[in-house]
Length: 127
Image (cartoon, rainbow, N blue to C red; front, side, top):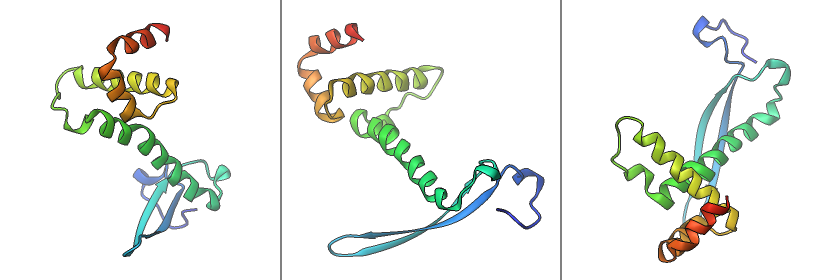
């Protein structure tokens, strides 16, 4: 819990934690230190749960945003104006949902569906 005088702008913050990450590869090892800021109610805050909150955040990043970028090249998309970026993001999310329903991995499924366009239409119509 924050125990020092906290400026008004930071009052929603209930915890700051320091997380050390170690990554061991075959030829090298890295150490990363990050600081996480969170604002769950103090009564619900368990210090042991803070690392899990950080992992949960990255699970969302890895499961959705990274997959959309790797599978559909979202970061390389040059569409930037109006509602088009949001519409394209929604289309990519819908495509990922359909792919996950089939039990396939996103990238191979995208390539598979590119070759068999009618199977995509059937899948979308059954959703």
